[in-house]
Length: 324
Image (cartoon, rainbow, N blue to C red):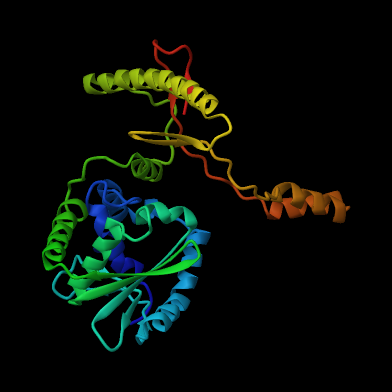
């Protein structure tokens, strides 16, 4: 058996998703979003980002670097497993040591991800700790190493098995899958982006005209929505004013510190940006003189971008109809 089995991963909870079963434990996954992705995978199909692809390319070389730094013999894996007893537990470990029961997780991060690793980059974030405990419980391993390539430097962290934590995670996984994946419940809606993705997929178009009269509960919801939009406009304007005033106080310095935090106003690094669309048109016009041929080339590279449903809201408390 080899390769990451996406269908198998869809049937249960994977190690990288374990922390997502808990509110505010995973930086990218919420309980609601995780449940929706498991129930409606078609709504969340996206192409792999460049950085995700780069991370996969770095996996095998990172295993070799880890082996060199530690002297351990390591086998790189690319396999999805399902636990024989706990069918809701799926796991795809990056590597395992061949001479001892020790696993290895590879993390390749951009420099901005330092914030996840504590002030001195010497602490693993909770969502990675949960991932390691999930693997150790599933594979009955006593220890798991995490090789982190962070900001151009390798770091190795060691996590020891905590049976109590592992058992709690496995039980949480059973409950989560039973209630929210195969059951008819959903966690509290804490991920509006995931909900929006699902709704755009489930209801991609509409009939026109097809307005209906709102019921009493919906009227209350719509009026609250109008009030929130008004408050958001006021708060947005106030936020901009405060930002300008704070920047004026900072002047030429880096920022301000205060008992509850800090506010910095830093200049980001210069970057080179290429207008590829204009470049392509310029080359096309320069090197293809025939107008019909240019139109043929443009037509070949033209794709239809599917429309999405947008909000158009009109309320007596608002000055004019608003779009979103």
